[in-house]
Length: 382
Image (cartoon, rainbow, N blue to C red; front, side):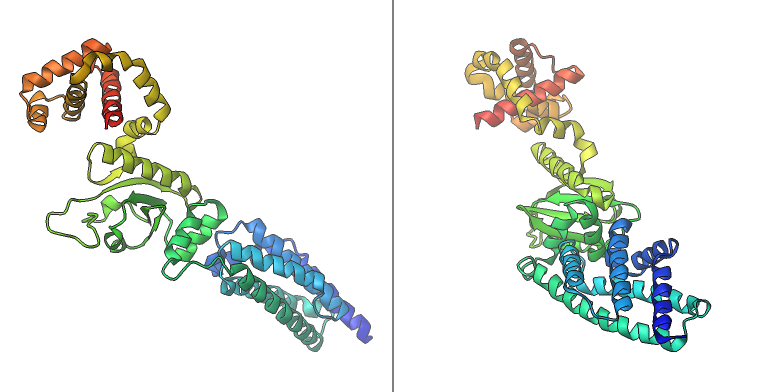
């Protein structure tokens, strides 16, 4: 066979392998299984870049040349994209290596039937390796350049990963993989005040960091299953109170952003009622719904503005009595003890509240309105 024809057979072989409709999905599956850091990327993302690299390599082999500037520009784009997705350069190179190995393994299988000798196939592989070395060098340079200025400060790696995780989408899946969190049963988000980092880290696997003045932890198990689970401050002091934490989940990594907001709402609701420990959003759902609607609270205040004025100097004592009575399960004795007044005083103030507002705090929905109104009254009065 003429040398030119021999090389044409090599190119046709590579084109046949690259164009195999069954091979590429198999290669992508192998990449996602072998390289954990890219497992969260959409298959279409990996397939698109892999196909483009293979086509460029085939063209280079056909012309027996190195990469063109246009091909290297594409490589730079790939490096920047993977850097912004949080994929380490080592993982990017590993993914390419896995794909290369599968492609050349198939080429060796078909070489004999396509009339390509072992020596010629080796020549093609050496030429490809030269092309690939230049591509890898540009890829590494672009990836590192994209990371300049975006690397987290020393000690801030967890916070950087956590922020990406809460962005959702493929970035979240990659962040979970980078953190090494198992996600078989979903993930839980816990939000509390800073100071409980040590307690959280003792219950691995967990990713936690202070973000926007809140300690946010992402756990692979529900905290209640971690026995014992008490949020003890990092520097505990004798008789220090147990902190409050809001909890939400479980959810898939891509959906953790709204889950984090629910956990924060649970924290706010729990703190409002003085609850301590870990409080799931489902346990304070109605309370969180109320506290999140400042617009409705304003409407409630406006509606009962005359009642507040009518109560005059007794407005705050009445509001506090109703609030304490409701939070004591309508037990006047318990409420009186908390307020240091006689139980009859609590009864009288609750009755007075009902008279001036027209709200029946004994009924289910009346109790909700009464609690919300009195809480808002007292908050506005401070």
